[in-house]
Length: 145
Image (cartoon, rainbow, N blue to C red; front, side):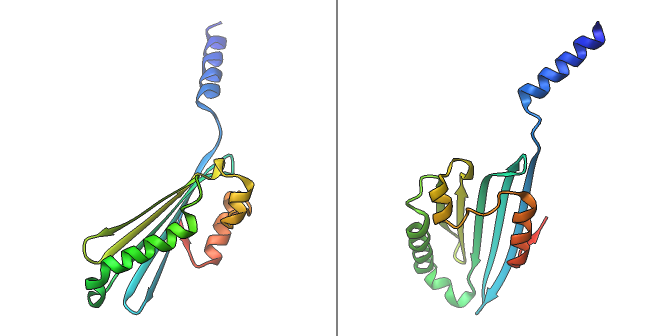
């Protein structure tokens, strides 16, 4: 009897907490051009091999010769990304200056709540599987953990 009660309790805990498999894919890509260094990090959360949400972080480091223009660069990137992603209710966007040489752009996509049309507009309507997304990012030059 005690053994059955233990099994029932374990089964209830699994039902309450969920037994879905959760995975995270984190990929980075470094690019440098004319002294400007760009590091893009894409992080995707999967539950039961389906995309739940996605974060894209872009860190731009300017060389000394551009530091005097960091406000101009920050405003440019802020306007560019807001015009591209700002109208979508399931995308949270922040662009901020860090010190006098870095610009941090962060985009959070609430993928599971996006409509099919939003996903298509944002070119996010491909496969939701972990392995397919990892392969696509690697093919774009990312290194994934």
